[in-house]
Amino acid sequence: MVADRSQTSPPIPASAPGARVGTMRWWILGWLLGGGIINYLDRANLALAAPEMIKELGLTAAGIGLMGSLFSWTYAMMQLPAGWLIDRFGSKRIYSIAVALWSLATAAMGLCYRLPQFLIARIALGIGESPCFPTSAKITAAWFPKHERGLATGIWDSSSKWGPALAPVLLVPIEVAFGWRALFYVTGALGLVFVAAFLVYYRSPATSKRLSAAERELIESGAGDSDAEEHIPWLRLFTKRTIWGMMLGFFCTIWMWNIFLTFLPLYLLKTQNISLAQLGLYASIPYVGGILGDIGGGMLTNRLAKRTTVAPFDLRRRLIVVCAILAGISVVLLPSVTGLWPTVALLTLALCFLSAISGSAWAMPGDVAPQRLVGSVGAIQNFGGYFGGAFSPLVAGLIVDATGSYSLAFYSGGAIAALAAVCYWFIVRTPIHTVTA
Image (cartoon, rainbow, N blue to C red; front, top):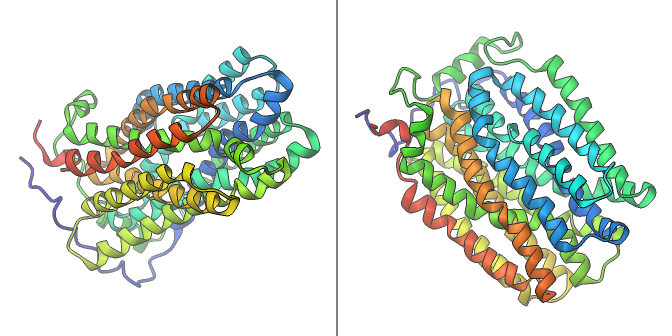
């Protein structure tokens, strides 16, 4: 058995605190943040277009939910080959192909008229978007020492909140002026521009000419465990208790996240009597809470990792437990509040806590696995989250159509979100590379 290092924090290189070692690794986050924002603009545009699509095309809330669920099922199933492809063929190549595909699929949504056509486009979107976040986890593990990965991950994972936060502000005026189809054309074109720039400018640490020697030393000295450790075949990952705990815990988080992503604008329009033009502001505010939760959670674990002997892995588990309980309480209370601003405030808190969970969860693959398997472990966790969480938009849509209310969807979703605390605390206990097969 390899010695268990999960209980103590690894030593931080002496050159790290306060030393001028370069900032290239932080600039790399710009690519991950930008790509993630575009990724989520291409998911959030459906929620914004949904009210007009329902009016113009005669779709139902269940139909919109089915689009969200089918995307999530495809996205989940493609996580497993995506993680393997990233580890096998490299981050840059797979990420570039993925962005191009999802951008074309987004633009195709603007050409659709019938539900089956939309469903095909959403399947293509799920295939294209599946490598995005596992690639980001892989690039983070390559560019950052372990004690910095919490903040780095929180920054790029906040793109999943920046996208929905910016979408109403940027896209609602386009929808008002040019119609709902323009949302898909504009966001699709944005992705194609991004991937062209990424292909030209992104470099790995091994090939970057702008990475200083001191910064390279910091990255390598704080990278964590060597790939010379125990070899773990890909399929054997599924025999590890920690992997199943991560999958189940992420499912509990994504269940409620998918409901918000698909129905938050419709919920505000239905319950708060606001106009489509006003929606741009009020649908953005809750995701600002998500941004703060993502980055704030990463900053907190980074700071504690430097000041305590507790390993970053265990710090992230503790943060997830607290935030999962608070997220569940916030969601369950939503149906009982009245008034626009109390509703927006509670939505903001709920998304803040959910986002702190997802940021810490995405940093975990770098904690629990050798670097060569980070992409695969991140993809497997995401698979678990989205395969199960894919049901939530459809279930919520059916509940709304049957009852005329979101209450039952929020009561059940809040309870499921709180169960993430159980999974990450009682099942996710030990890094997988410290356990013999």
